[in-house]
Length: 584
Picture 1: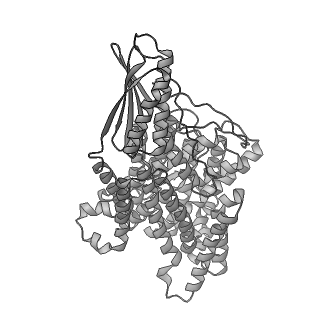
Picture 2 (picture 1 turned 180 degrees about the vertical axis):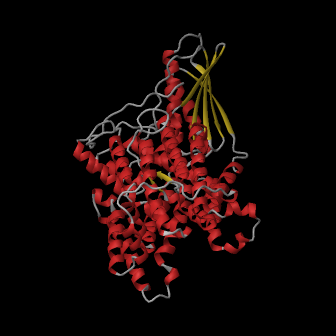
C-alpha cells in the first residue's frame, strides 16, 4: 500500500519559504552571507593542502577550484525538479568527515590521490542513494550515531594536534601560538553558550575573525603566504585538476566509510530541512531525501574530477536558515553565483591559505565537540540493549586503539592495514559485523487469535504488547505498532462485512532484532482503504542552536520516522493478510 502524502503547513516563523523569491537587494545580501559562511570551511582544504606540501601558486589555484566546486554543489542541491536535488537551501561545505582520510591520502600520494579517492567516495554515496530504500534496515541509531561519534574523534585528534602546535614547542614564540589558539577556541565556545540567535550560529565565523586578528598581531601570518596572495591577480580562471587523479586500493575502506558517513549526514540535514519548512511534518519524505543524497554524491564525483577533497551538506547553514526564517532555495542559487565570483578571483579565494594551523585546529576542536556529543545522542535516542552495548563499546575501542597502539597496526599485513588505517572504517566495519552476528538466534514469533466485537480486540493487543516487551523491543515502537494494529483491527471489524465471519483472525508478530513485522490475517476480501497510519509520537524537538544540530536532530527525526510507511495487503482466495513493517 503506498504511503499517504504528507500534509504541508507553512511554519509561522518563515520569512521567505522554500518556493518564494526575496526582493533582489535582500536576495543578494542573503546570498553573500551564505557564500561567506560556506567559504569558512575552506579551512579544511587548507589543512589538506599543507599536509601535501604543494607550492603556494598551486594552493591558490586549488582554492579557486574549491569555490567553484561549492557553487556546483549548492546548485545541484537546490534543484526543485528532476531526479537530483532536494530543492532545499542546503549548500555543501568541505566536510570534516573527509578530513582524516584526505590528510592520510595527501601524506601518501599528494593531492592527486586526494582527488581520485574523493571521486571514489562520491561514487559510493551515489550508489548508496540509488539503493537508499533497501538500506533502511541497516540505518539504525547505533550505526548512524557511531559513525558521527567516530568522525568527531578523528576530527578532534587532528584538531587538537594543530591547536597545541606540538611541532613548534621549542620555538621562542610558542606561548604566542598557544595564546592565539586558546582565544580562537574561546570565542565560539562562549558564543555557543551565551550567544543568541544568528550570532550563536555564526560563532565559527567570529572565532575565525578573532583568530586571524590575533595571528596578524603576533606575527603568525607567514611572509611567504602574504607574498603569494599579494602577487595573485584579482581575476583569473583557475585550472581544474592540474595534478591529475590517482587511486590506492589500500585507502578504499577509509573513503568507503567516509562516503557512507557523508550520506548519513545528508539524510539528517535534509530531514531537518523538511521539518523547518513544514509545520505539519510527521515523517521523512524518502524520495526527497534520496534525491538530496544523490546530489551530495554527484557533487563529490564532480569535485574529484575538478580536483577537490570531499564535501557534504552543511548543518550550520541549514541552522542559520531556520533561525532567520529565510529558507528560499533561490538563496542557494544566489550563493552559488557569488561563490563563482570568489572562484575566479585568486586574491579572494586564496585569502584562506593565510589561516595559521593554530586557528584552523581550534575551529576543528570546536566542531568535533558537537560531533562527539551528537553521535552519543543519536546512539542513545532509543533504548540500548545488551547487544548494542557490545557493538558500541567494542567498535569505539577499536577506533581508539589505532591511535594508542600505532606500532601494533603498522606491523599488520598490508591488506589488513587498508582497513585499520582509518578509525572510521575499522569501527564501522566492526559494528556491521557484530550487528549481523548478534542477529543469530534473535528471531522471535508470536501468534495471537483475535475476534470481534471491538471490545474483544483489546485483549489481543494487550497480549501482543506483553510479547514485544518480553522481546525488549523499543518501548516507543511497542506503542506505535500496538496503536496501528488496534486501528486496523477496529477498521476491519467496522467496515468489512463481505464474509459470514469477517471479525476473527490471527495477529502475528515477528522480530529479528532489526525489523519488527506485524501480520493481521482474516477471512474475507481485501479492504480497499486502510486507515492512515500516523506516528503517535511528535518529532524530536530541539532548537538548531549549534553548528551541527541540523544534522543530529534531523537524523534522529529520520530514524524515528522510518517505521510508519511500509504496509502490504496480500489476498489468497478468501484469506487476507495485512503486513506492517517497522525498522527498529
